[in-house]
Length: 344
Image (cartoon, rainbow, N blue to C red; front, side, top):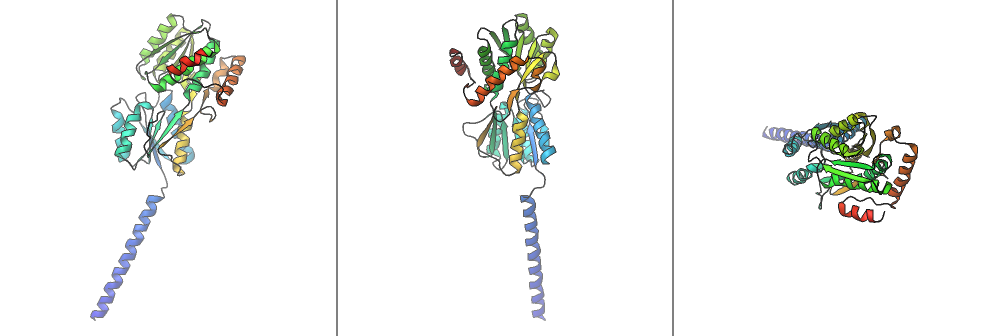
């Protein structure tokens, strides 16, 4: 009798063991084979509807949702203090890939990478001297597209006086500034260039005021790289019937009769390709990926032909070939620019 009870107990234990092992294996499979990945982006203070950088990044995520089946969302940052809070929110939600849009988020993403070593991050438009192993950096040769629109400005100005309005004096904006100035001087060495920073990416009124000031001093073509500051500047340019040059994405919709062209930076392409690589298991943590003319990620907008004559576009396309071949290396800093113009 005791023997039969002992056998029964042993059989029960064995069956329980099989069930426990089976359950644990099922759980492992769920963790290792995700059906749907979640990818979220954090905007800088300009917001997702800035008609520029953040909006382009969000368009890239929306494409990823449609074509790759990932679940996407964004969190807007109203002020710099929101960066860390937004990262923590997405980590708590179990987000698979967190994308910080813009160089202002770089310090936050770098710290978060240390605090959450198992979390995967992407920083757009910035890099680090030592890129964390769980961070991939996306960069763009924005100086190339800025150079091309500078060529257009130099050929379209009637007053021989053009301008540049930047958001904040920082490396990513200076890349646009000096690339643009190099293009202007290449196309017209005698053209005068005025430049000013708004110290903001959101102050439309400041952008409008700076543009009006430049226009009153004879400027008739202005390139703006400053998020929503550009919205205000383009409004002033439209009211004065002068020329504007947009940035990051085609901004001709803001003033079809006044936006000559836009210095395209296909943030949407960079974001989409990064998400695609991630879900395919090709996340390149600890490295940076650079997109330029060769990759079709920078250039001028398709609507350029609406206001710019064909002979000028042909000239710009010929110069673009020199950029692709390396015959022309566009400056990104003041020091590089000063050296560049000495050889013109």
